[in-house]
Length: 265
Ligand SMILES: [Zn+2]
View 1 (tube, rainbow, N blue to C red):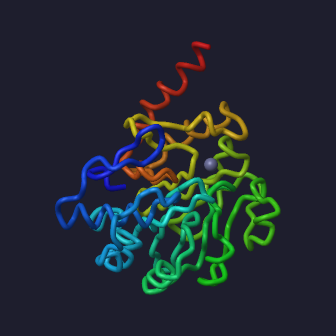
View 2 (tube, protein in one colour):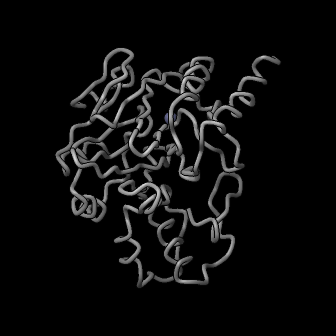
């Protein structure tokens, strides 16, 4: 978040330039509130922090993807993963777990609350219990990723799917990163929420975060390949820097990058 002000040095956030416009300052404060490790600080308590708190959840793109929000407040217990909110006429869907804060809960409530909390996989569950209790939502996680901390999840997906939540919301089993990784396809908006299955690295190239794979790299690759034929315009992965427009052609070109090192090995 706020690339105008922060950069990455050795996988840590660092101040690159102090914000010098109101917009840059709001983005910097949003990044401060979302930082999972509290590594961004201000010298004095900022008077406009309330404004920044009220800005969450943030629309991903008001014009092109209305009703789709980035929740901010990344949690260290979800490895800093981004979570999202879909405002849907049949009931809103919270995707993965932000850090629990009452302010964000209230703001989500003002947008209609959440009927479901869909967890893409076991790494990004953080404060799921608190959210479930506060918003009274039905949690969803694939049974292969359920462990003792998620044993009480209300809806545990079995088998290979796909599963339909609504007419335009489908859950697709994409094992590989973990055995129970599942993507959410929001058909009417052509958006795929991918968790850690696939996304874009800071360098701007497609990434499957191979070094974090917990199940099977070949399986993950095959399940990325399966996505190429889907009608999607945007990938929203769990990794924060990566909610960028990503069309099928980009996924196709990624196949070349992903498969060549394996075939050369
Ligand atoms: Zn993960």
